[in-house]
Length: 121
Image (cartoon, rainbow, N blue to C red):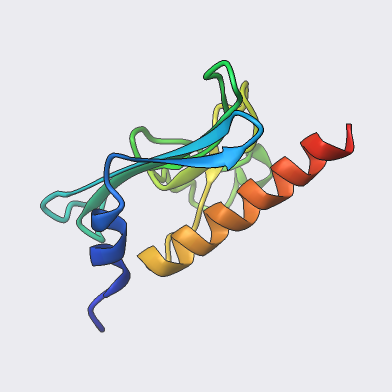
């Protein structure tokens, strides 16, 4: 298995708050942990987009387990910790963690998409 060089990038971004304009902001938290079945990549992370008043609009994290959608009820239900919250009230849907660079790319792609939707309103 090849080393995930993006983890160092993610760790370097720990505790960063990144202004997205218009009062919207991104917060990144990441820390190294011992690899476990819950975090086999050895990282605990939380990447969130917030509205001007602080409410989370979007998030990617591995802080808690989420169950796969019910449509997969017969397919050996695997509980995953890597997941994303698509909106403020979303309990989370599984996210397939490939590597830290892909996580950052996927997250910021979604940030751009959500902020574009906000601007259209």
